[in-house]
Length: 213
Image (cartoon, rainbow, N blue to C red):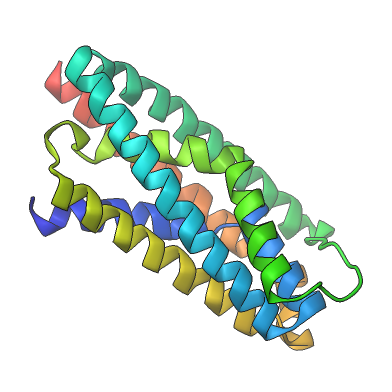
């Protein structure tokens, strides 16, 4: 499969993974309360969790498309609705932050250690509704119906590496007080960038759907 197919998905995932959500907040607060090592364990948990989501959703959707080809169009419509929802949520959060509300983060005692941080990160990933909706959107863009085992393996390994790396950066930065203060004051910028990005992706997806009709 052409590299461009993967790059588009990884770009989408990169913005989605980096934008504020349950996984990001968990990694930041873990690094904040438990130090860099606990934050890195949390980042590893996110990477593995994303890989599991990728495998499960890819094989599940591939089987569905084989049984019922019109499911691709249905998934695209669902993805459009989700992308618009993402955009609205992030742009609203950006506006609230711009108006001075900032971004609050949970405080607490020191984390229980790397093992607990890793397990907690996996649990947050499993229960994260953003992960499910994100993969529904991803698989409307990636041609999973004609993807082979190697293609799905490359997609999942790339997603795992990307998510673990992004969260490792968060863990490194937010084990310092200065970065935490900056995020609380200017974290809304990330939400704004994510919102604009999702609007752009939704517009491109809508154009493809209309053009193929």
